Amino acid sequence: MKLYDCKDVVNPRRIRMVLAEKGMTVETVQVDVPKGEQRSAAFRKLNPLAAVPCLELDDGAVISECAAIARYLEASQPEPRLLGSTPKEQALVSMWQRRVEDGILNAATSFFHHATPGLGETDRYRNADWGQANKKRVAETMDWLDRELGNRAYVAGDGFSFADITAVCGIDIAKMLGIEMPDGHRNLRAWHARVSARPSAAA
Ligand SMILES: N[C@@H](CCC(=O)N[C@@H](CS)C(=O)NCC(=O)O)C(=O)O
Image (tube, rainbow, N blue to C red):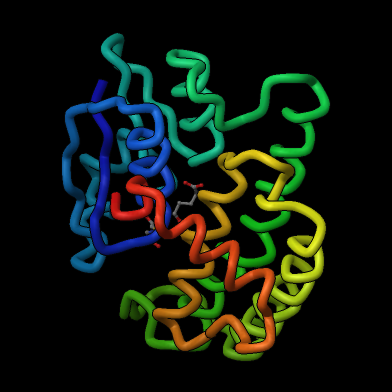
């Protein structure tokens, strides 16, 4: 099994955190995303969408999309559970994972690609208004999450899950882009400190 990774960008960190939480190690190949290596013909054979992370299995199958990779890793090594145990837990993790992926992580990266120089490609479609709308979306989703975290310790319930991994990676990349957690968001800030203290957060 081989992970196509890049230390400089946000999505592969989600998978490095899953691996760290599960105590799994896999061979990794660094793909230089800032230099555009993911757009090479060789890499597009692995992932036609030209994005990392991807997990190449020993039989040659390639899995991309963090949620799909996390599902594969959870099925391969179920403990500790990151995608929930009961049907209800699994549905709540899936729901919140998607909400924070869309409203924080993907919104922050859309801001990066549309309203900043992004990765610098001249042929990439850009719409600065769309970038700013996504910046606003990150702030709105942080407001929502702050309210939700008044009722529970973690994003999807009482236990740490893949939804927390996506949220902390999204919030950290948003911060690097200048979108900070507001000072008044005490629940969100306490949750962020709790999750950032886990050894996997350094992955
Ligand atoms: N939905 C994908 C997103 C993957 C993605 O966008 N990865 C970024 C790095 S964080 C990438 O490789 N971008 C390359 C590019 O924009 O050219 C996932 O969940 O894995």
